[in-house]
Length: 318
Ligand code: TXA
Ligand code: MG
Image (cartoon, rainbow, N blue to C red; front, side):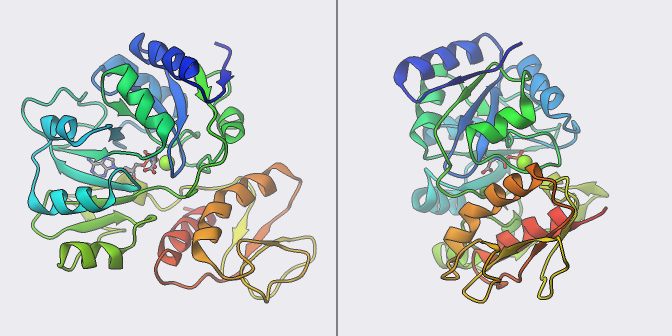
């Protein structure tokens, strides 16, 4: 198969929807990162996502919808879900909820778990694609499993060349970091993957504290395999919290004190800006003959928590 990049217009989105209806794979932009989409209700379409990404089949996928009514057909809704959805959807938060017995979602997509991860993205291409397809779309980030998430169409092309029928090109994504994954299927809400929406924002919204289970395992089974330590990795070795730099090492700086010639996630120490540059910079450096990458410290607060989570995994050798 030869992958074709389609520009952002209604004809392209219709063509991509037709491919999804035929059971093929389409990569598309969301406000966070690009997703590798397939019909979430068809096992064979979902199976081809795992194959294209070389993703272990125990790692479940996020199911993307374009309206709440459709979400409620698949999962048991609750009050916390209602408040979070009203506040943050469409947008970068993924809710884990119990699967309804009548759900049409492929069991393969949720790796046989009793829960399903659901999200309504706000990018217009994603929304129109779901609408034109007529079914929810299962979509992990559109990269080879374990490697860097894509924030533009070229990143997808580099990683999944000829393993996806179409890539809808929506330019660089707005946020550049994956959605926050929160488990609402248990008594106490638990953040399984930090993301753009912070713990503080969630607690303020639901007026209840939430726990973080980033490295937790339950019943000797991984709850959210995004927790696998090594993940989001460039091929080049990466050091984090670096304050001294080695010769020939490429530096990713943060803030006004970064070495003058380094790339800088944000000169003004703005975490939103840093999040949107993170994967882009890592992709760029991964492309060059860099021997190693050193990243300066990022404050461990607010969005910095999600940025540091990705950096720790990117630098992990496990
Ligand atoms: O921003 C995003 O979330 C992007 C865009 C494309 O929507 N998607 C994304 O998908 O990052 P992926 O597959 O790379 O990450 C999904 C995360 C994984 O950590 C997975 O283990 C977790 O969600 N997950 C999915 N279903 C789950 C479930 N039923 N229970 C617990 N964790 C789940
Ligand atoms: Mg991913």
